[in-house]
Image (tube, rainbow, N blue to C red; front, top):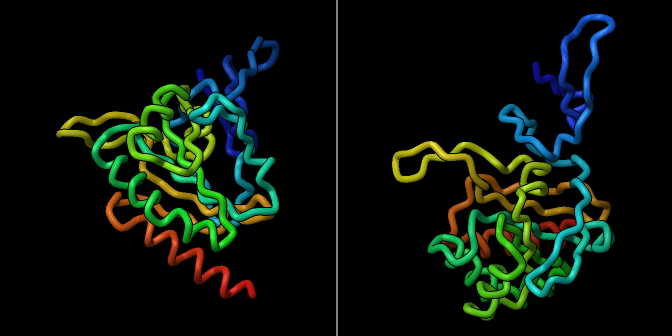
Amino acid sequence: MVIATKSAPQYRILGRLWPDTAFEVLPAADFFFPWQTPMNVNDKAPDFTLQDENGEEVSLKGLRGKTVVLYFYPRANTPGCTIEAREFRDTYKKIQKTGAALLGISPDTPEAQKKFADAFNLPFTLLADADKRVAEAFGVVKEKNMYGRKVIGVARTTFVIGPDGKIQHIFEKVKPEGHAEEVLEYLRKSSKGAS
């Protein structure tokens, strides 16, 4: 029997629910929970440390005090992800002018991210989440329909995380074309509202 409660979603408990029964507590990051609660606006963003395209460690905690745009994409060097990345490349300087940091993240290795960044001259950081632990923590590993088949994978989702580490905005069911401009527009509006 597998049990995970909303009050303690970071654990998976194995065993039976009656007295004198042994059970084992394991980290939830090792497992996929189909009923996993997605992140919501005003939730604290899960802290993480991952390698970037150069093999350097990047942590969300290290960016505290800045607005962070964290965009999840399914796979490096695929058509939709390439469109999205090139559009973020083309708006990157404007995004920087808003004071925000831009991070792309996918279930790839640092080497795959490096090839992707080099192939399209991407000036922003790409994070390698090969085991999907961060994607699972953010609740973006979902069932998708791919060429008529149901598959589990990373759903294209973007989080805007405020300087306090809380989620300010979530873009779900993202379409690659036009998304970078949509994010830029949001950042400009929110920075005007803050001043």
